[in-house]
Image (cartoon, rainbow, N blue to C red; front, side):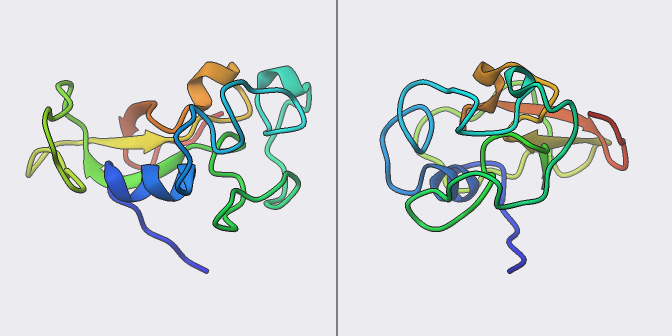
Length: 122
């Protein structure tokens, strides 16, 4: 299945899968939940090594950052928005979900970061 998410509600809703907690499994993170720095693996893992969220999606928290199609803007929109896309031009793209290299707090569904398209790293 190939999923494409915008920077806002769509990707975050898919990640949390109807839950109201910080992570789709609850309020705290532990090494059995996701691949992140405390796991001690030190690299990416094949998808599906951790339990799926309630909607059946794997690895929505951790393992690798997920690039979105949206351009980054520092000020996130306020109020009710659906799939904000950012500015019409720019070289920075939004990524979400954290990676194996980061602490668990970076794996929150609401966390976002940015990078230049095509960048490869942890």
